[in-house]
Length: 250
Image (cartoon, rainbow, N blue to C red; front, side):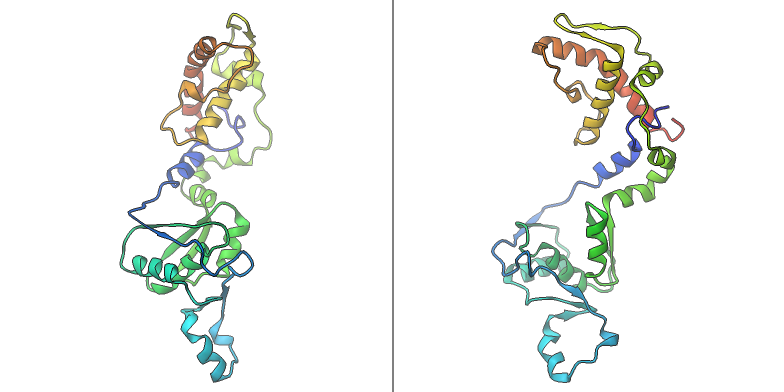
């Protein structure tokens, strides 16, 4: 029904949100390592095309693993993270920008060449860059591409649609037909439709399990009690819209 309401497939968002969890049984801080924003750039190295003198090869061999050439010798913290990974422990890497998180992941991937892994980034540019840095056993993908591969393809028509469904048409399809009188403010039908789809959008960007009244944006000029009343009135419409968005035939 609402194939242009959000401009995205709802189950695609659901897949992305579900991919956002991670295990953190052990934590390895990487802060204050020798890596900086300028130097945190390990590069992929094609050993088959190398034409180096033996002395040069011996000097960098300790930092070379399965086709990946590390820019610098790993720090003690990075080595500890690598060891924890090889031992099969769950861990989370906590560090600031440019301190070597990606280089540590490259080190991890190179340490288990017979195992497959996946590096997930937020945008395509980062994923494409990572493909030149990781070994062949690591896939580099975006969260959206993973979600699209499994469920997004069912919503391709919605994702390809450029125009959004007008508020008046959204209201008609949801069955919103009367003005809401919230005392100090009257909320027109079209405004209600926008609020409803805003609730769905805010829910998609949250970690909540279901759409709730708290996902409605604040309305200027309304007291808290009136705000709560309006959100409860619009909640059934928001849940109906979400259910429809989750249906490939919607």
